[in-house]
Amino acid sequence: MENLNKENFWNELFTKYPKGVQVFCDWIDEYKKRNHWDRLFNGGYEMESPKFHDLPIAMQKGILIEFISYYPKDEITWYSLQKISNDAAWTDALRRFFIHLDVSDKIREKFIANLKTTEPANGR
Image (cartoon, rainbow, N blue to C red; front, side, top):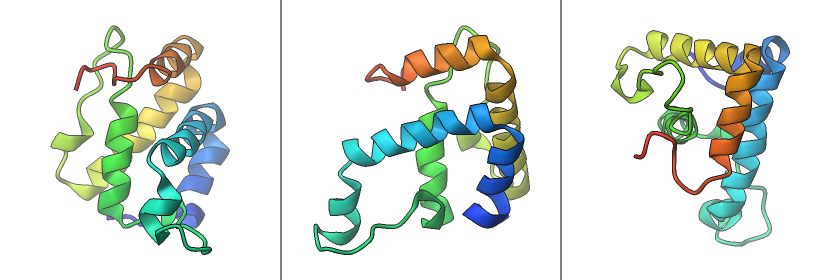
């Protein structure tokens, strides 16, 4: 699978689709607080916790699947990334997701509203 690190994936995505990726950046900051990221990764010791893009790919995928599960279900159906087994197809689908989130103000606003709820929009 393409390495989803900051240099070769996230920086490019943010440059091309800043509004869509910023939604994720804001959400991941809240996710880290909600899940006690520092305690989880370093047991509360005075050391720097890993950045999202430095996590193993499997962990990144799981967190991204949770993020995408807040997609408004009354909009076009967004197929589940969980069901894509081919790594290249998964990365391409993720890019398309951020393109879609970036270009549609209406969907982005609904998505942000869903992120403020406690449950994903798909009722998972």
